Image 1 (cartoon, rainbow, N blue to C red):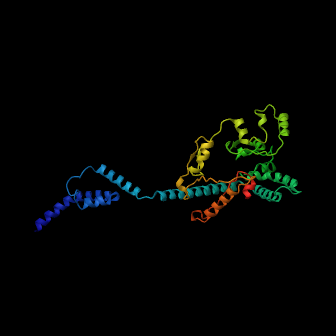
Image 2 (image 1 turned 180 degrees about the vertical axis):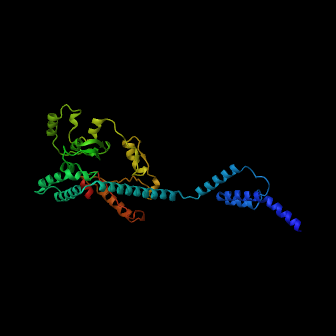
Image 3 (image 1 turned 30 degrees about the horizontal axis):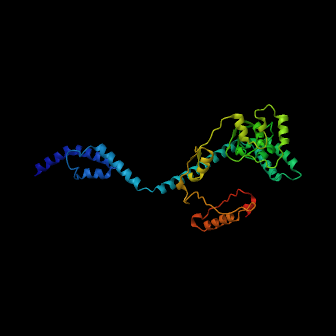
Length: 349
């Protein structure tokens, strides 16, 4: 009995390296495929022989693909879309916060006390100026320009309407690296004045939008001044109050860069302008499923007649639709806008 047991123990010792190698391979397999490793370890059918049942690599790939497809089939597309939008919003907010904090940190490191004091004094004076109708406004504007000479270096970016530019900055002394003119298609020729103060100018606008409205203005004095002072300039007759800054930029600089991606409206809404004005070249990137209120666009005909500048049936219909909509839970917390194209009388009605 001792001899048999000793021989069995000696045989097991000879098998020990093989057993340890088997355990090592099973442990490696168990990390990625625990069920497969358990079947091999317990020698369940298909894994109870001396040879591998089939080719392992294609089988492993097939199992990976099968599990991934099963996982994807269980996912909810609306939940994924909502999570993408939520994470996109969070990423945007974090990025904005990071940019803001780093910009302020860099700015505060450069601003001197003299500049900061001048800036705060300038802000206080601009509040006193208000609408610019008081008798002390000329003196306050002179003081504001004097302070701006020291304060302008404390702020890297100034955002203001055209009227504030001439009141706040000296056209000869002050220079900007870049001036960006926004909504240039709605600004008349007076918006060209800040160009003199810039090393580079970026003109942003849309020639398919409304142009400056010089309603009731006398045109002959304008054309007389143009003939007197601007003759010889390219397209000098277009320096009137009906030609936008965007139009002038196109005349002067030629080609424009069109932004073709639209983020704001769902495709059903932007497609009207897209087909009307942009030859279908605008690419709406907002998903229709991003808004729970369907449909996004409804054409509703009203059989009313206009009396003067009012259409009473149309006004009552619109008001009724709004009253009905605000009672629906889908519109909870929503705001409504009404655009009237026939004048203030219909808007009041």
